[in-house]
Structure formats: C-alpha cells, structure tokens
Length: 96
Image (cartoon, rainbow, N blue to C red; front, top):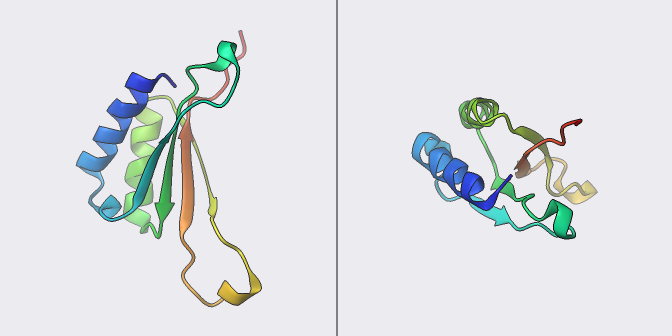
C-alpha cells in the first residue's frame, strides 16, 4: 500500500483498537525495486486479545487489505509462555 494509505490505516488502528496501547507498531518501508516502491506494510507485534484482533481484521477488510498472523518467537523454552503475535497488514497483489 502507499505510504499515505498506510499512515491513515495506522491512525485508524490506534484510534479504534484500545488493545494496541503499548504494542509495537511499525510501518515497514518497501524493500523491493522501483516497480514495487509503494508496498508499505504495517507490522504489529505483541500479545493481542481476540477483540483487538477482530477490530484489526475489520479495519483491514474495510481498506481492502490482507493480514497475516503468526507467532513471533517459537522455541521449546517458550511453549508454556504467552507468546507475542506478529500481525502484518499489507495490500494483496491483484491480477491485472
């Protein structure tokens, strides 16, 4: 997504998702060559409750964005601990 759109979505997330307080939010710049220069992503790291995840999904859908979730750290030492989530919001590739 373009930088301006990513910033707008970030502001909306922060304004509507109370559960994001204290979580790490990152606007990841594109690391691709020129044709993909407007491919910013929003990365959220932290332990997210179900309500916050649902709000994030609703906002992503509203902006026609995709999201991908997973655990940031997965080691045998952290099996019984609450593991932080990593959620990436991005503009999906569309077929022309």
